[in-house]
Amino acid sequence: MIDDVVPAIAAALSAQGTELLVAGSKSVFGSLCEIIRSRFGRGTPAEHSLLAALDHPDDTERVAVLARHLTRLMAQDPEFARQTLAAWNSATAAGSAEGSAVVNNFSGQADRVVQARSIHGGIKF
Image (cartoon, rainbow, N blue to C red; front, side):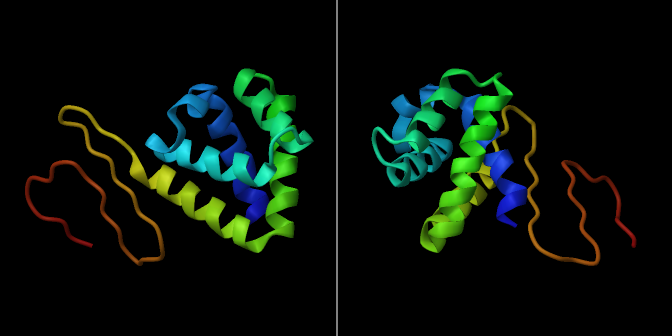
């Protein structure tokens, strides 16, 4: 599972850019970044990979290096992995909508799921 989600985490963090370092835990992605940066430690190669990915979000190699550091540390430290995945789930579930837009989130298993903004009439399965 970690191998599947880590590249998405690394890409999402880098896409947010250095604003995450300023925002800190004021945003869900800021909280995720703080968890990772705290575990990476200051002045380490892992932290340098995070900062490089934040500074250069379009550089896929820098994002891949960040993902490798993140994968390694999550495999070594189950508590860090749990915290990171929990923060990632919160960040991706938060969503945002403006005006009359709708954000639908579904997680889990179901036989039938309907996600809709406006339904006029009934729904039949």
